[in-house]
Length: 190
Image (spheres, helix red, strand yellow):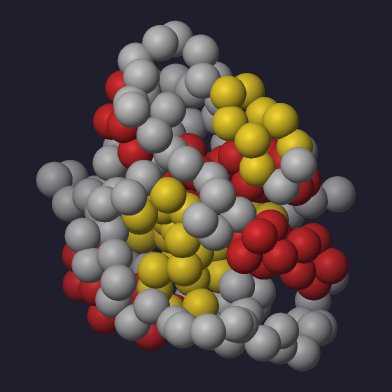
């Protein structure tokens, strides 16, 4: 049963988190939520030769671990999970790295990544742990997720209000490139 109380507590990966969120400024579009979703167990790829490889790998692991467990159905802030992609990415990033985007808008999250919180990487071949984002632009609703292994992407599913593996990098590009573009970043953490 969905509740509309002011406080929502959820448990994931043994960590108890209290989700306090701001008003939703831009949403998520995963209307093709199963577009090229992968099957079976993902096989970890070779480690990437970047300075941020270790933190990226831990974000990839956190994305995988939270699949099916993290619910964005926290109330009106996320339209009961229908528009919870930025919230879900923020929860995973915050728990894993301490970095807080403090926004529910894909456009604002993109600006934060572009203006120093992230290091741009090739969106056609993002490393595990990269944040892949197609920001909301005008009346086109964007989406954001975290790249796992083997080109699998994890993001909030509007249909189920649950974090899941629901894209591949190639499928993401087919769906979002013509709409609002696709960008990828690794976090710029100390």
